Image (cartoon, rainbow, N blue to C red; front, side):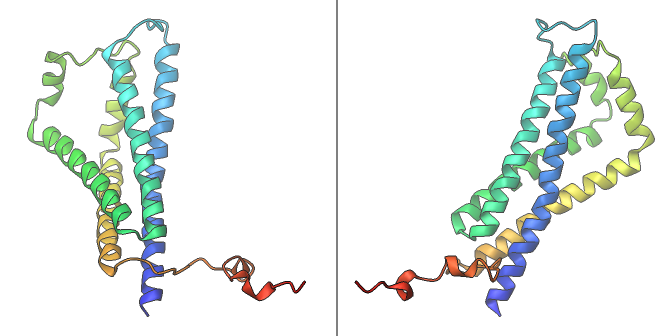
Length: 195
């Protein structure tokens, strides 16, 4: 019964972790698209090192970090190693804390756009930032649901990791064993050659 429960928990953790991986891939693709649009604009040159380009690169780095966290989650779910699961829970905690800080700043600080312009948030030479803000305002309910699904997936991954870690170390349980791959794990002692 414990083997079946462990296998189910590992599979569910991998499945929920795939949602986080898709979010990371989406962030990377969107950041690459923003870089392409930003540098294709006639008012922007490759030699410009404006803060908007830095913002795009930070978004790209964050997307790569989310993909890394997702990959580490798959490794942790497959091995059920306590150290891997602890590192994965720490990474997920960092993501949740960062999201909570940004959300609290946006919701508690009503004039966050004005503060960003006074501290040097860059002006958008392409004009795409205004269209992006209008898109978010017109589809605010969809954005809320996407944010809720991402945070719920991260919380569920954290919870499942805690349960797997509490179950203890894995003692050679192979959940994804197929009949044709079973012979790879059988000892070779049965095939002794007599000389």
